[in-house]
Image 1 (cartoon, one colour):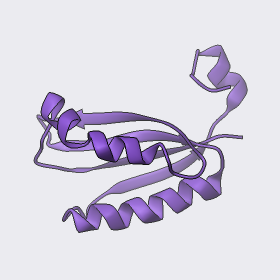
Image 2 (image 1 turned 30 degrees about the horizontal axis):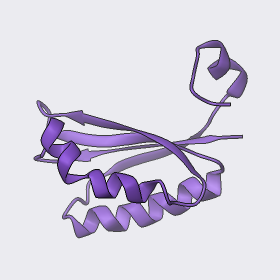
Image 3 (image 1 turned 135 degrees about the horizontal axis):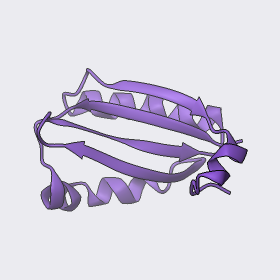
Image 4 (image 1 turned 90 degrees about the vertical axis):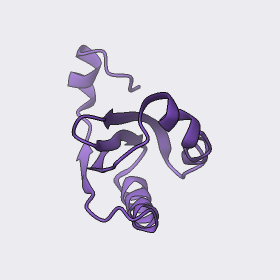
Length: 101
């Protein structure tokens, strides 16, 4: 079974291409996390929010990443993050073309 980790938080920027350039090394490092499968980066410059939707192999690896990432965000001065972990319903996700095997 796969697990989704959903995180969002307030952020003053950067957004768009500037965000992509500044966070490229961070994005590459996320690929090395245990149990990590993929991430969709999210941003809303109008409401000054950012975050992501992550897919992990297990609930344990998602929880481990969330614990580490919460500490990393605090190091950036971000302490108001919202996070949830969900189990993925694989049969329904397959019907709706979700990128999960």
